Structures are given as structure tokens and as C-alpha cells.
Image (cartoon, rainbow, N blue to C red):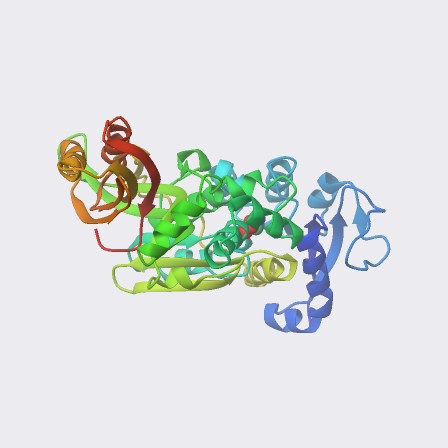
Length: 439
Ligand code: HSE
């Protein structure tokens, strides 16, 4: 292949970085043909030179001086797979200032401070690509950014965290409790020793912010995302979901909503949330098992689309990084850039209380005349319409399972508070939002 090689600096040589380095070497011939020039590794920045790693590196390529590597004149492209906020942010900004194009897998940084990075890329006239930041190998950011750029996306529902999907799947299929399923996930290497980021929904919330920003052409950061994890999901919730023909999933939900603007006219806003929810077993996302990820997109012209695959792991995530690397390298060869940030709609993010959703509520009540009517009245008092009620009599009490129509989250949580305070209600045993079915 003619032409000077394009030189790549890789920051980080862990699970993903080592696979990127491997693929750069093993696929060198194909990469050169696809890009139009050879693509060569210039250096790999690591914290410790002598740490054990999964890939053999030619001597002299490892360095602990990442700042010097990203500023080197002979480096054209920088791949950041260190993760976390710092030093990743400083290194990416420096790489862009020095005229390098950047590929990153850093969801936390993009969700917290994406606009700073996008503005730096714009100023430098360079690319910033990040397909690997959401749902590992699954191509989802490019479809949102490019393939659907002429359509109007109205909703994105994602299972974007493999660890929590694995845990909920085990609770559903094996009847495991949360703690037992978490231990199994840890034994298999899905969950980390400190599982907080996955289990409490922080990882999914960062991904939801990135998805919503791209889908709705606006800026959404992780702090805009309402977040609830799965540690409170009980065996009773799973059983109640089963009874209803549903399954419990941790969903990242990004929606376009029409609200009343300050001038009284209709205004579009976005609602972005991560929480466990019941979805019908007939919904395509219900079939996503084990640690797999999937993103379900609804748009006006295309209708419903689903993107499915491995959402984590070294080689799958490296596949997404390499795809970006080829695109960015081709752009450098042809002297062009890909599309930058598209945030022209500047839509407001709705508070969770104003978000419309549906609730499933299981209630243990006294089994006597008037109790069902009193429960129905509690829903009515908060303006919540009931879709279905199921009652099962037991000895001297009964279980009521109520599923509401769509209402605001504030109306629904006020209803549950009200129920908890009623004399005839012995216990509210399960409260969960219901998604993926008509309101
Ligand atoms: N820990 C994540 C998961 C993968 O369980 O899906 C990286 O985002």
C-alpha cells in the first residue's frame, strides 16, 4: 500500500486496549486496504510497563508518559480506552489540540462532559468517534447519528448493561434471589467485586445520556437521567411479573414528549430514565437473555428497529473501536471529517415526576366489602386510571394486582403512598413500572 503509514497511539492496554493492539497487528493488511494507507501502532500508554497483559508488544512501544505520546508529531490518531474522567479528559483534549483525531470508549466522560470534548474536536477540525461507549460491539451510535439522521426518532428503549441483565435473567429463569444471582455474575466475571456502577444503574445512566443526546439532537448529561438500580428487585416482583406474562429488565428509556411550554403552546421535551421495569414477554427486548444487550429504537418513518449483541468484553468492544478507527483514518486520508455534535434542538429534560409511565402495584388487603372500591378510589383521587385489576382470595386476606394506564410518575407515586397509609391495606408487596405496551 502506497503512502506514509497513519500512526495510532493507544491509551490503555487492559481488556479492550490489548484487543485493539492485537487487531491492529493481525488485520494490518486488510486495514491498509480499507483505509488506503497502512495503519501502524505508534505507542501504547500504560500505568505500569511490567504489568502482565494479554498481548505481546514490540519492544519500545510501551510508555508511561501518555501526555507526551498524544502530543507526538508523528501520531495521527489516538485511541483512548483508559476509562474514567481523569486523566482521560485531559489526554483527549490535548490530543485534539495537537491535531489528532480521537476514538474513545469512555461512556462516563462523554456522559459527564461530552460537550467540552465535542467543542474541542470542532475547534481542532478533527473527528471524535465513540461507538464503543454504548452497548459494546453493537452498532447503535452510528445508526442514530447517520443512518437515522433523516428520520425522527421518538423513543429508545435499551438493555445496555449486561451484568444486570444477567442477574435479572437468573432471577427469572432459575428463581434465584438477587444476592445469589449477583454472586453467580461475579463468579463468571460479569460483575465486578464492587458491583455498584452496574447494579445501581450508573453505567446504564451514562449510556442513556449518550443515546438520548444522539437520538434527540440535544444535550443530555448523566445528571439529567433519573436512575434506579436493581438491588431492590425482589423475588415477589419477579413472580408478579411472571403472573402478568411479563419479565423484569433494567431499561434505559429515552423518550420525546410533547409538553406545554411557558407560552402555553406545545413544546417538545425529552424524558430520560433508567429503572427496572416489567415488559411483556412478547416484546422483542424480553428475549434478550444472559449478559447480552439490545437497543430498541422507534422512529416515525422506519418504525421499530432492534439492535442486539454482546455489550461488553475485550474483543467485542475492540470491534467497535476498530470500526471507528477505520472511519476516522479514512477521513484523514481524504482530508474530510465526519459529522460533529448535533445538539441544535436544545430540548428541555423533563423531571421524573412529569414523565408519563404505568405502574404495576401488588397489594395485600383485608378481604371484605368495600376494600376494592376504596383502593380504586385512591387511584382515582390522584387522577390515575386503572387498566386491569386482578384479585386472588386467600384465608382472611386477598391480593390485588392493579396495573394503571399511563399517568405522570408523580401521580403514580402519590397513589402508592396513599395506599400504604390505608387501614385496609396490609402491605404493598410490589411496585414496578410497566413499559413496552400501549398506555
Ligand atoms: N459493566 C458493563 C456491563 C459493561 O455489565 O454491561 C461496560 O459498560
